Amino acid sequence: MDFIFEPEFWVAVSFFIFLGGVIYLGVHKKVATALDARAAAIAKELDEAKHLREEAEKVLADYKRKQGGAVKEAEAIISLAKKEAEEMAAETRASMAEQFERRMKLAEDKIARAEADALREVRVAAAEAAVSAAQAVIKAKLTPELADGLVTQGVAALRTKLN
Image (cartoon, rainbow, N blue to C red):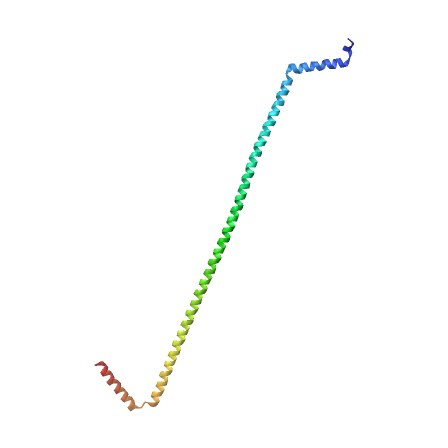
């Protein structure tokens, strides 16, 4: 019985008493329950993280799809803008050609009017010159007897035409 005086014996006794107290108080169940709760919380967090990852992948795929759609839409807008620019350039060319033709026709009309006016002025000047020349010739060669004869002749011609 000398072992009762050994410190190792009392350490062993106190250890078994401690274990008995722990088992009696149910600390092992509480620790196991706490560990199970912690494991459940970790599992829940893992599930939530997995769910969030799946959701993020869906959002990423959606944004990639939208980006592809946006690129196609941008290409369509650029194509439409080029087509509209080409149409506008063609319309502008046609309008410019039409304006040029219209202005050319107006210029040709003005030239034709100027030619007609010049021709008329030349005829008027020629007629005036002819009348002046005739007046000068008549003044130089017309005698009073010849003038009376011409007047008598003109009156006689007028009487025959009026009857």
